[in-house]
Image (cartoon, rainbow, N blue to C red; front, side, top):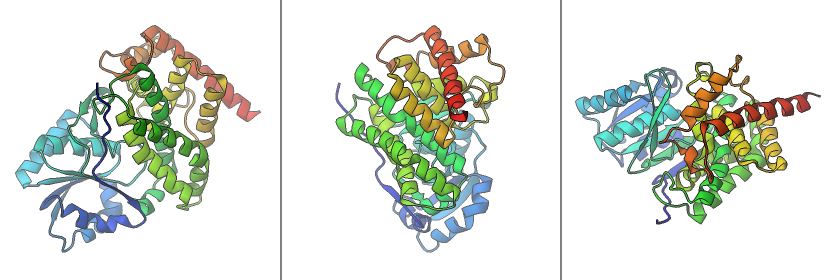
Amino acid sequence: MAKILISPSKYIQGAGELKNLGTYAAAYGKKALILISSGGYKRIGDAIKESFESCGCSIQFDYFNGECSKKEINRLAELMGSTGCDLMIGVGGGKIFDTAKAAAYYKKTPVLICPTIASTDAPCSALSVIYTEEGVFEEYLFLPANPNLVLLDTDIIAKSPVRLTVSGMGDALATYFEARACQRSQATTCAGGKTTEAAMALAKLCFDTLMGEGVKAKLALEAGACTEAVEKVIEANTLLSGIGFESAGLAGAHAIHNGLTVLEECHHMYHGEKVAFGTITQLVLENVPSEELEEVIDFCINVGLPVTLKELGVEDITDEKIMAVAELACAESDTLHNMPFEVTPKTVAAALKAADAYGHYFLGAENK
């Protein structure tokens, strides 16, 4: 099988870049449907409108209904048809992006992605994660192409809640470890081939950036400052992780995240927060050296990512709940089977329990 690397056609990151959105959009269509949350519209709707003045592309806003479900995707595809929109623009966070990408795919139009947060690696990918109306993971929708353009205004992202960027670090944290597992197992990646050396290098750079800049970035954001460390972490969360996961592969961490969606207690947690715990669980499954496990858990504690099931909201931990997570994580169509060894619900359940115990151990050591 061939090695394949895929990426968005253009990636733009910088302070004040939202003012150029209309100019960029005009190169792709005449009328854009802009998918945004009601809160996002209140914050930056006027700035978006201003960017489209005299650019030759008209716009129509529509509010996201809150879940990347088949019902919402179909609603937007129908709306694009009835309003004559020939371009989709997703503004906001990961579920908006995935919904916008899917609707654009079904309508065969270009799609532009404009993150206002750096909480996931969804912006750059040719993938939509589909959930049920109740928020339970349903399936991956693999798309034939990546977004035409990804634009990040770091001034806006730096003003978003710090927890969201930290969540993005949790999502990005998995990138290298899942890529390494896929390389070892020679698994087929989301790009449809084997991993390239370039994708592995980006995945490793993603991890190194988090280790070197993550804590600094969090402290800077808490102080209201957009420093070079913040810029580097935004790139790691979005571009490095986006290309890394897609072209180097997903394995245990994201499958365990998907398993956690079966627990209603976890629904209030962000994607990257659950992925971070999934990363720890994957490392337990792999029985990595203690030093590597400690580095990852310490990083999570230092930036504020959950390292126990209690921190994910699961107060009453039972064998039945653990097994339900493990069974969904081991679904035949999920990526846990990209690990370089056989996995079963029983081994995943054991790893979940052990990961939770290690998290409590290191939290206790931090508090002494």
